[in-house]
Amino acid sequence: MSQQFFFHLGLHKTATTATQNFLRNNSDNLLANDVRYIPLNKMRNEVSPFIYSLNKQKRRMLFDLLESFPNKKIILSDENILGGTDEIKEANLYHYGKNRVVSFCEEAGRRPVTLFLTLREPASFITSMYCEHLRHSAFITFDDYIRHFDVEKFSYANIFSWLKKLPRNTRAIVIPFEAPPQNNMLATAARLLKESIGLHAMSSFSSFPVRKSRSSFTQEELDLAATIANQAGGKMHLEFLNGLDTNNCRFGTTKFSPFDPKLVQRLNDRYQKELGDFFCDMR
Image (cartoon, rainbow, N blue to C red; front, side):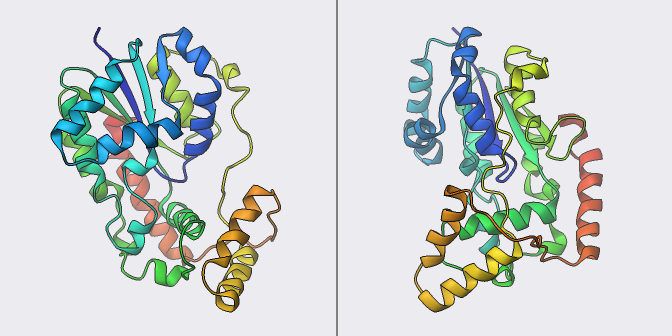
């Protein structure tokens, strides 16, 4: 039996957690349509390590695992395949994603692979990535976070230029996070289901999480986190910031907006142009 693979790559901070939770909670409905979703914990423990590996034999072992599932269609989702939040700080955003993804597609042979990539307005994306970075790492100011990253030249078309040279068994679908008329948190899940089982009815999304998971922090929250980091040292700010999410006690009214509005506009103008030019045949 020839399988098909539907690979949700992210980006980070584009409702990936909500999408993964929705797929997990609807596993039975997917299986009824011969679609198996591999939950994130299983994905990261048993599948993603094979994709990270530089050893071709180990990468081939991955498909032995996938073929053990008696399902024609497999949905995989792990935004960390592309990279991590620390890569902006190191000025190599998604540097390793190309080799990981293309190697997977090549090893799939003639089995069809559909890649799903959700893009987000650059300023919002970078700001959200910074906030996510603070949930896992030592405290760093935003200016230090982007010190080595050339924000002015940020371009999704450059980062993902390799999408134009995918193996013949692979196609890419690019979804703007802001795309109307759907709620932006639903866009990726809706497209995944449409492509895998042909589902169109939005009423099927009644169980989709309505509350954003780990949204960007407010200026007040970040100011207090900086004070905690400076006075308590170590990684005490981690307990504070993650506690805000865990206990649902977010506070503050000032949006964290570290970029000059003119820079934001320039970035968004380039983003919209790339959606219309570079990514137009992937939407």
